[in-house]
Length: 300
Ligand SMILES: [Fe+2]
Ligand SMILES: [Fe+2]
Image 1 (tube, protein in one colour):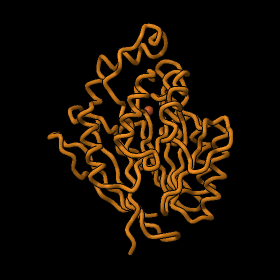
Image 2 (cartoon, helix red, strand yellow):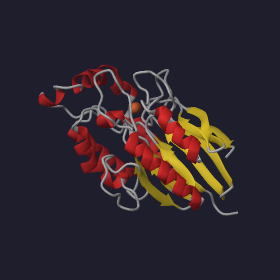
Image 3 (spheres, protein in one colour):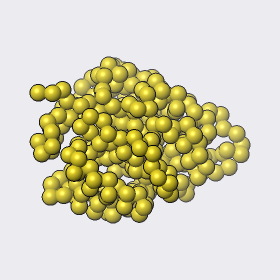
Image 4 (cartoon, helix red, strand yellow):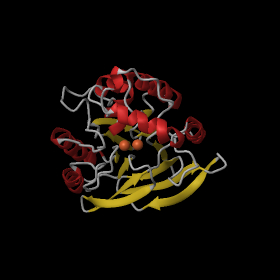
C-alpha cells in the first residue's frame, strides 16, 4: 500500500504584534480593529502559541500545508510583510497554499499589499488568464490531490466580517471541479468563510450559490477557518456528501474559554473511487505542549 499524502491545515494565525499604525492609517475601519486588538485580541492571539503549532506541523513533515486566511489583523502594510516572513518559516511557496480571509481585506487598499507580499503562496501551477477575481480560484496539483484556492475576502463596513465568492469565481470553480473529476484527483477546496448559509454579520453572502455548484460537481473535502472552532458539517455533493471542516485559530492561547490553537492533518490514501481520508486534530494543551486531540476516518 502506498504512503498517504499528508495535508496539514491551519488557519487564522492573526499574527501579532501589531506594528504601530500611522494616524492616516487609522482613519478607517482600522481604528476599531486597533482598539479591539489593544483591548483584548492581543491576549487571545499569541506568537508563542502559533510557534508551538508551527513547530508541531514541521515535526509531522506534511507533504503540503494549507493556510485558510486571516493571517493579519487590520491590514496595515507592515502586517503583510511580517506575514510573508512568517510564511517563509512555514515552507516554500510551492509547499504552502494560502487563501485570504476577511482580516486580510480589512480595508480596500489591503489587496495591493496582499498581492505584493503573498502572491507566490496564492498562485496556481499554471498562470491564470486575466480575470477580475484577483487570480482566484487557483489550482495546484500535488500527488493525488488537487488543491483549489478560493477567495472570499472582500472589504466590508465596520462591524461586518462577511465574505463573498462572486459569480465569476463561482463559474470558474464549477468548470475547474468538473474538469478535475475526469482526472480522478482528490479535490480539496480551501476557503476562509465556511460555505454554509447563514444571515449573520460573519456569513458567506453567496453560500447558497456556492453550495449549488458543489452539489452538481462534487468535491472530496472543503477546509475553512473564520469561526475559530473545530467543526465538521456535511453538505450535498454530486450524489454523495462532502465534508466541510473548520479549525480553530492557530495562534489562540490555551488560556481562554475559546478553542485553543490547533490544526488538522489529513492522511489521504486509496485512489479514485476508493479514497480514504483520516483526520488527525492536534492542538495546544494548557501546559503549552501540542498533542493529539482527535482522530477519525472520513467516509469518502
Ligand atoms: Fe479569524
Ligand atoms: Fe475571518
